[in-house]
Length: 284
Image (cartoon, rainbow, N blue to C red):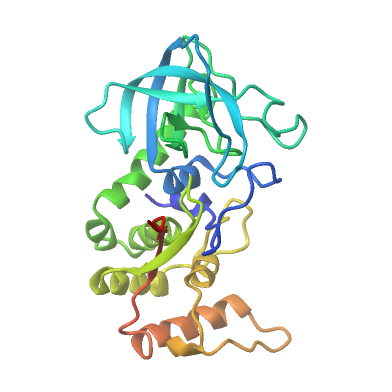
């Protein structure tokens, strides 16, 4: 698992996700998988004749005509258990308020194509959707096989978090903790509003311990998720017994923060439960 998860970056916040037409960085496939409720490898077998009018993104007030691709599932990685086919809606480039030139558009699906998809339910619930700036990976891409392997490994952590957090090496436990913090502290794709629920105490303790024992690398561009960013994503405050680190000129802020975090885990944070971001249920 080493180095598989470290390319991810936790996008943290309890507010509603950004509008779909805003500029944002394209996340690594591992991060896309950690934020998506449905991840599959599938082949487009048909494009339905009739379009479906539906909101383009959560909270949109207008509806846009979506083409519908019928996709045969080759490999279900998460969220499509007991299904052989799914329907994926997509909007051709430049339609529905997504202007050409504002970052890479999600692809226009065509019959015969095979992709690694990261999907969410459309708000209307009529089909699955490709979140904006969360493109699938085409089977012909040079990175496709490696991306599928990386996504499978990181999603195995979600399938059995405790097992992953009790792995034989500190490095693997650390990578598992990074994956879980990304999953739990990122706004799920397709979510309009979120609330928080406390994670089970035992799992929280394992995650915090693994983070405290890991290597908080921050000097490589590929390590977009690391110990320091995972720490920040937890959102600790003085109410949790956390005291901000004050670094003097020339001191290593990351090293000081890791040292303080390890002491916090063994002291004020010994009973802390990580707050998981979940979709807020609509009031009836």
